[in-house]
Image (tube, rainbow, N blue to C red; front, top):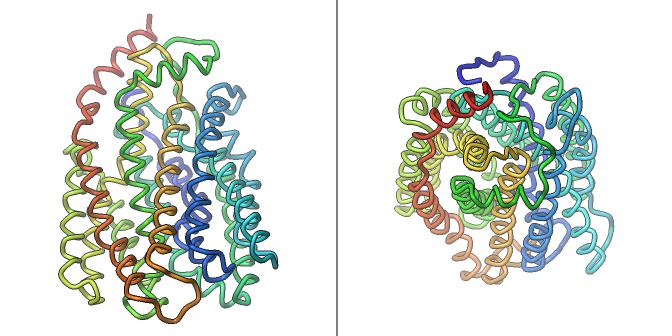
Length: 445
């Protein structure tokens, strides 16, 4: 499978799956906390606690989905059928999440818990097999990187649409609770259609080097615990997604209270996502020259420079925009390589243990992403509450203002340093070609 070239149409079709996913999931990170505090009227502290509790429960769901994917057998493959089966439930879960029945107090919080749990289950059930699909399309490391670039390009494009259009759409469709619900009816319908396109346009080609029976959960976990590079990447994803969740969720608060205009959230989103979109189109040669891990490390250093620049004058819109663009440029190789590196740990695990468990490996990846985003959104709510923030106010106290500034500038600095340290010890890029060669020889025997 090394050297297999994937057609442009299949790469594009694969990428559309993350466009579909992010129509709902990026909205959760960008607007859900604000929706709960300023439309539904829930407290920031209660929301932060809810995010963390649900994500802990969801860890077990991710594992269960991973096991089911590994045991799925159909003429269409082990990963692709899940996209067909779960497209409609995922779209509906997004509509339920941003629907707010006229409940107050405890009733509103119970509804939030239930719908947030539903969206997490639906996301696991469609996103774990979607990630596995990368490993099933090809074994070629560079082609996997290209697939991931298409995936992340579409994710970024979807995030731009969400960031720029959501607030205007909400107002156009009636504002308040009705506007939010109707907006996500549109997003949900688009998501369903795009996931079906991904299902129809992709193929599963990769087979295990040795034909194996269904792997028990116990054996699968033992094999997973011996996969050191998988463990490193899970830690990396937890740190990265915690930072992403805080950064995306705090934008609307920073725009409204520090920069003085909540509509600037669209501009802040564009300064984040447009450089990502452009960068994804040109990052492939850098990855080919430096390798996935080294390209990501260079990107982290560039992002750190952007964050430091922001400290010069964090209330000046021009400085903020320039700093965010630099930070975003540095993020490009990180996003472009993360899932491709995770895919490579499948072969490493198979080579190390003789057991190939794409589903479990990607359920861990999904857990890392969701645990990080859950911790990030929880931190967002808790730190807002610590600062004394109360939703719906036209002005806030200085402590709340400092809390918002800390989450916008200084907390990301901590996360990027942590990402650099973890990824520094990742060495699989050098070993991977020999590992694939040995697996192919085993398959030949």
